[in-house]
Length: 143
Image 1: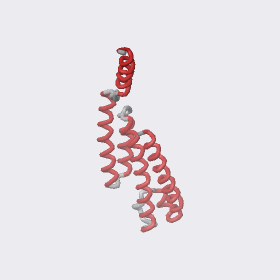
Image 2 (image 1 turned 90 degrees about the horizontal axis):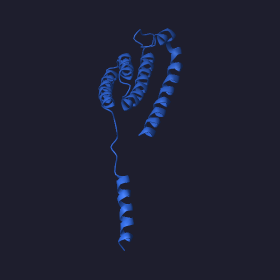
Image 3 (image 1 turned 90 degrees about the vertical axis):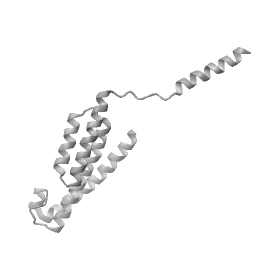
Image 4 (image 1 turned 135 degrees about the vertical axis):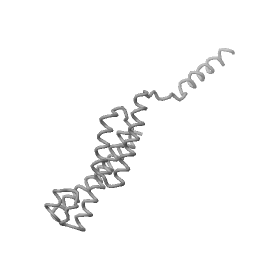
């Protein structure tokens, strides 16, 4: 009779031990890189908000080189880089539509071409929109 209870009890104990939540093993280097990566992304977002697109891109590139173990921050950086490209293209289209011959248009190629550059900018805009959607779906699949 004791053996009858002992086997299921032992099986239940092994099952509970196997189901217990394991803590993820993350190195201190990765934690430090993630923290620094989040700070760099915050700076890049601030630069994006103030329309400093080139410096925002440079901040993300620097973060990628300086913090190779910041995997989550690097994935977020991909989405942010897509957003920067999309916003910069929208800004260029907006400025070119309002002032076709203005020297303030961010893209020198667009200034030379005038309104002839609009179709190219719209193609870029559609490309960046699709790329952002694709990268967002990829990011969700990693979570």
